[in-house]
View 1 (cartoon, protein in one colour):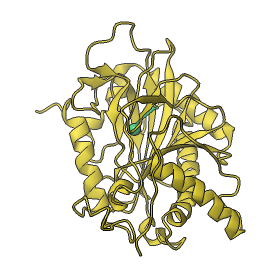
View 2 (view 1 turned 90 degrees about the horizontal axis):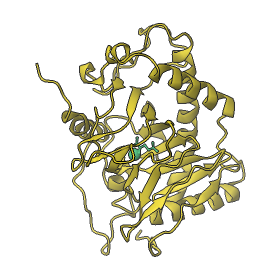
View 3 (view 1 turned 90 degrees about the vertical axis):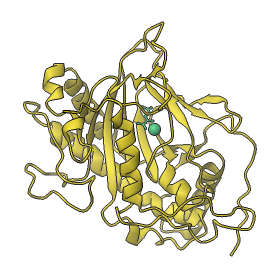
View 4 (view 1 turned 45 degrees about the vertical axis):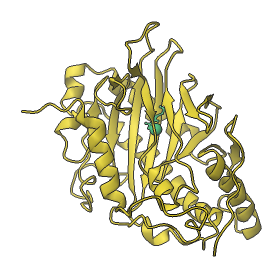
Length: 332
Ligand SMILES: O=C(O)CCC(=O)C(=O)O
Ligand SMILES: [Fe+2]
């Protein structure tokens, strides 16, 4: 059935959506929340989640661990260099990543991990179901770091799983439409540290260059220092100012491809001009590796003909990650 996805003009602000009713047993409340989500996804591609349900304590402990980790000597951190990882896990040094090919490198350092059980202490339980999965790597001599980071990872994954039925409703699909497509979600989490941008930054260097995310959606925690900016359809940068107690959600390219751009994957960047050290934690929520991103029913119409080649979700993300890290790859 053809659907009418009305889009408004260029957005000037990012909506705040209250998730108190996300798990309500009342279908009318879930539907009303889905309608708000739909508006945000069709017009903005970004929204804040209020009452997201992840305890502050879990967030604070994980960020405390991130600060300790990034304070380690560079030499120690480089032992887990992401360029030595077959599955994009481990440490990215300053300028080690280049999200916008027109730039020269991103002024942040990062630590990347994927799924493993919350209480994992060895690698025997690691899942092997696509080339981005497989063992995480962990720093030595940081007691509690693995457990603390995994506590946030699993809380954010649970929040992500709550979102899929709402996205399905937002697309006028049955609530369980995505259920069999996220049985072992390819969710990649990053800890990010942005040093203050110098007053006169090197040309082509930003905290993170203008880009779209690669997966279905990203759940982002950001600290109190403003840096994130989102581009509206007029090419104007809109500040995604930190709002205490909220998370930022943005859609990525998997969803844009899957919905034939009915859901927007919006360009964004971060520039830390605050003068302070800034920390953030994105969790990129992809579907199962082998899911084919074929246009979702109702998203291809005479007015909105198919725009994308069908790709496998995992292959698509992998090719984008390879391009991101290629600029600093050390070849033997
Ligand atoms: O740190 C931020 O605010 C944004 C991070 C981001 O866009 C990303 O990692 O893809
Ligand atoms: Fe991003």
